[in-house]
Length: 137
Image 1: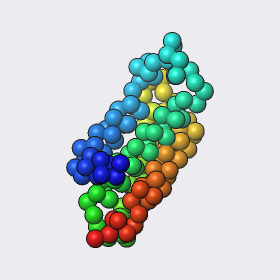
Image 2: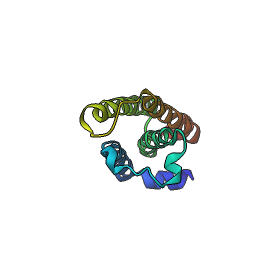
Image 3: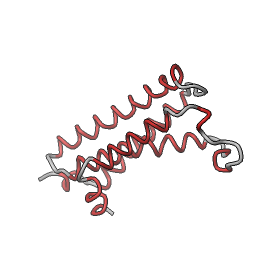
């Protein structure tokens, strides 16, 4: 799996696309989000799972990109930490954008917790997938 991930994330296209898709999905008006008649949208807290996946994906793909480009262990840890913090900040900012600027969307602290959880879990997963000795050159 590491080889496939390394190959996919060598270039920035996958992390950039995932980030853009996440921002676009969270900026859709409430009327554009399906709900009635689609069973998995009716699962309690399903939106939290989506937030965990979206923001975990941002950290995962950007972190894998940084790991695939080599560097020292200290550099990679700093990059991964920065990516995680910026991703959490993005989640907070997008909640305020939804509240103030997106019709039929609201502010939800639970979404911020889900965003942060996804980001942190993804960074820990990356630390497991890419042991520090494998990142160093």
